[in-house]
Length: 199
Image 1 (cartoon, rainbow, N blue to C red):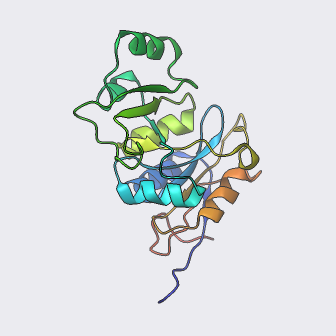
Image 2 (spheres, rainbow, N blue to C red):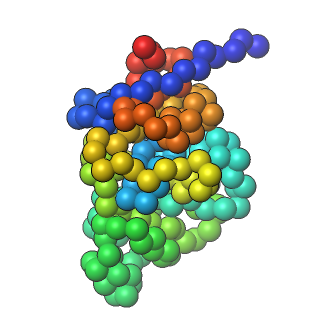
């Protein structure tokens, strides 16, 4: 059995890097990205392999559902049934650090694995320019668990890093990238070059 070469690619959270990170997500890779509260490991919420990679990278039990990140309440409504109260909460607090748990919509595309087999879905619309840009560029619902407190930092006020890890990427590299003090990042840990070779 051959070993895959794993690496991390760091780049500033500039428009080109966000496009590369979005392409990595669409290809099933993982991205460490900032939100208004923490850095987290993101993947395409509709891709079972990407979701499984997040669970594996985090050592998270499969019975613990993940949070799907969306651009806004309209995008959330395509994934979950938002009642009047949930819509009012989203209107008042999104984008922002509020997670709404609602029944799955018939049009829901989020992986059953991301929902831990439940008929409900946790949704959040992050209030961070990099997270919003990545969601828009990727065009798929993002899945990101909150990273444990020991491995996260609050996003810095200027040019926050994002980090991408390919679909077979190194979870350690992605966690290190998310927790580093470096001011630059997308990172790829994919030997197939999802986001380009490390330099």
